[in-house]
Length: 131
Image (cartoon, rainbow, N blue to C red; front, side, top):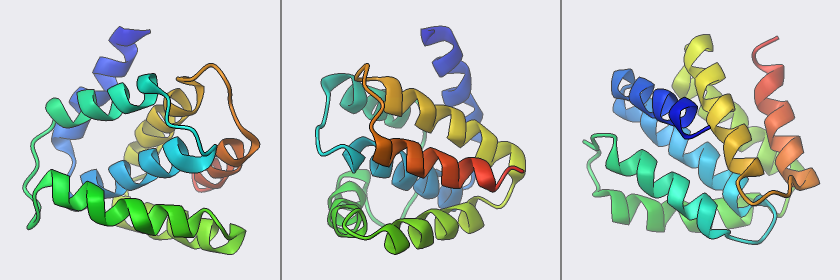
């Protein structure tokens, strides 16, 4: 299972900075969806960031700090979640990269051995974009 995850991480090297930010946004959305941050989920984000270059105007720590509040507020409203996912998909643009990110998000959702209905909702929104 780890080898598959590593293959997906290596694919992020071909992502633009905007696409990487959208990927992180979606992974964090899934991670926070059930209200519990499992160490395995945090580890997935850490590994992803270690294996990716970051060239945003803000450092990764600042970016994560800024987006966390947005995600927590977004999760309070189903319409806001739909809009957040749609905006992330637009920033990604490429169907294959959306598929790769969907795979990462599915792994994130199952990292704590418990897929929450809110996590499933987010995965469905991503999957709908691939149809």
